[in-house]
Length: 431
Ligand SMILES: NC(=O)c1ccc[n+]([C@@H]2O[C@H](COP(=O)([O-])OP(=O)(O)OC[C@H]3O[C@@H](n4cnc5c(N)ncnc54)[C@H](OP(=O)(O)O)[C@@H]3O)[C@@H](O)[C@H]2O)c1
Image (cartoon, rainbow, N blue to C red):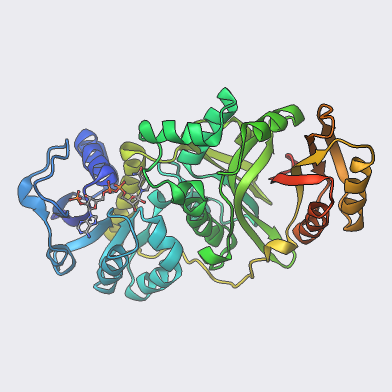
């Protein structure tokens, strides 16, 4: 009988407790599948006295990371603390000391993934991070392994449950953003400081991880264009519905002739697209490969057990590799493709503006769109406001972002235009 492999857990919060719970529930089958016995030997926490709603031997708890990182008997470190520091330092130290690492930390992988992957390769150990994107949805392993025969053309994801929950409620109840956000906070679906979710930064981290794997090139977070959902109103939702679209916060990466597009922003998604049917806190990742065609992964993007499920799968992979001496089986990040500037991105647009309701206004707006090469696909002008501003809404054909910005700069100066209330990008349909 093999000696149990010792694991060290950094963090016993939501996900750490989920991992322990799954190990307690499904112990036998997981041990069999790993092909080797293993045990959690130490757990790092900040407060050993905290009630955690889970049965854990208190002798396993420590507040000193060295008890795990410096213990030569611990072969696998599972980092579930979150945040950049000290998590990055701990992962770096563990790999450097020849320990395998499993993490669910999107901030660390998005910011330092390429460096850590190189370090793991140089030490001949594994670095797995399935839980870092879309919680329980297996997407890292499909990109690293199952889809390697493909040239991935595009990847589009709903990868932030909080914003999808808010947009779903706004759509269902025709409610405004601030009201739904307050309710989401009260229900615990949104953080007290929701900026990372609402402004799209969390989704941008996840896009960096997905796009780096899909296109086999390092991408940094600052290269991702990022726009959040706080400007979306019930009016935008109603117009989207009128045109046959649903508004979603999408993380989008596409292969283009000169580079890669990488952007996070609210998007009009056609109702017939499978991403339009992803509601509430659910996540989904839609991708297109040249061989496999269209593929969508759907499931719970957060939570103790779903994320724990991803972490356990990584642990089992590490243990299987360890048993067969086949570490670092997958090479990644082997080319360098530039990320396109947002001005070069071509897409369609929804534009909602308020104009004084006088004859000739529409012709003026159309002329200014035309002057920058923007052509209109559909238009709605609502009500007669008797010299009061009325909403006018356009959907354009595909055009470069640069042209769209130039035309809007012109339109904003027209005396009859009160404001440009919102501009939302529109994604096309399925092929
Ligand atoms: N929650 C989710 O649904 C979810 C989904 C996908 C990915 N993730 C990722 O999984 C990771 C963990 O998330 P979580 O929600 O489980 O976090 P959490 O509930 O805040 O738990 C963090 C744990 O780490 C410990 N910890 C944090 N900083 C520490 C430090 N400096 N020294 C010692 N211990 C420290 C905490 O100890 P105490 O308990 O003593 O405070 C706690 O046990 C994050 O990277 C997160 O992005 C989470």
